[in-house]
Amino acid sequence: MRRASAVGVRGVLVPGVESGGWTRLRRLAQTHGWRFALGTHPHALPRSQAVPDQLHGASAIGECGLDGAVGVPWEVQERVLIAHLAVAHEAGLPVILHCWRAHDRLPPLLRRFGPVRGVMHSYSGGADLVDAYVAAGLHLSFAGATTRPGARRPLAAVRRVPRERLLVETDAPDQRPHPLGGRCEPADLVVIVRAVEAARGEALEAVLTANAEALFGAWPGEPPPPG
Ligand SMILES: [Zn+2]
Image 1 (tube, protein in one colour):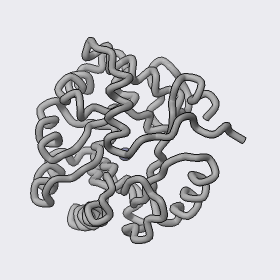
Image 2: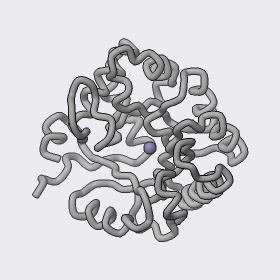
Image 3: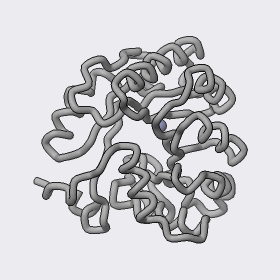
Image 4: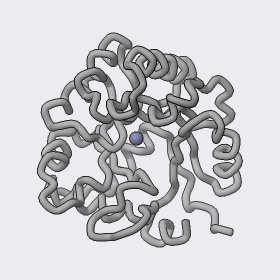
């Protein structure tokens, strides 16, 4: 958090993964001044299909979504996702959506559900699907893949997103931006901001901050000192 603060990161939002970790996540978030989300990540679906009901100060619902690599039937994944969307809608909270190898299934599901406020996180689809996600109501967020040498596909998608729907994230501890090695951390966000700015040929720091605050609410000034 000290390193992140030093490069201008004003706050972090830590998504939920599975119900067994929600209590600990909430406690850590309260201790360290993080925001947090509650949800069941598709990777956790073989063990748990829990949908959060006690929200206890969560800023968002998620991660939730579809993943073509987890080996859980689509009917189950879609049922759990729709339940998360319903909780978010009911609570007036944004969702953090995960989608991997399921970009043929997610847009139709979102169309059936109706407008969804939230973020398509670490967007892995092509530029051709950006309009469908924007029409569904979503922001699109980009992570370390934008920094890889020869990253044509993610950068084409970056250029397609309307300015007011664009977000960046670290997806820490995964996806450390190139050429850094090891675990990704919040301070690495700057490298992703620069890659996205280079792809679009414009300064975006203020826009990205405003977009994040429009979706998740205003962050208070500086994060509390670590320790
Ligand atoms: Zn994800």
